[in-house]
Image (tube, rainbow, N blue to C red; front, side):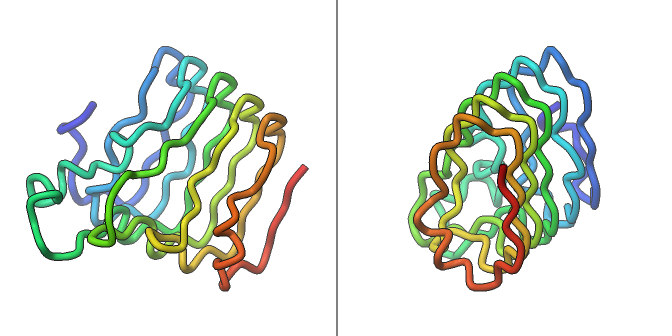
Length: 158
């Protein structure tokens, strides 16, 4: 699916892609506002760095000196019913890259094997207002950097 998504997409819903082992690169889609669901991806074990689409931004963002923004318009992201999902990788970058600068709602449900969620103030999520984490039994702690999410108004966990 990589390379075949129209750049003007504003919403995407990926449901019951049961054989998918990887999520598509979406971070370079500058108009994307809603990722309704990454749902039912039963073979997905890792939301890897390919998800960010880092190499799609102006060729390769690592070669540019200007600050790059990934998921520049995304307001809401929901990951649901990904039974095998163990980790969501953080993008290994320096201060030249901002990730999720407009994200307000992050909802993760039914990912019982998930152990890590990348929330870092330095790289993004300054607008995070709602964080909902449900039915993620292996998630043993929240990221320490959550304390820097000063816009956070709602936190739901069970």
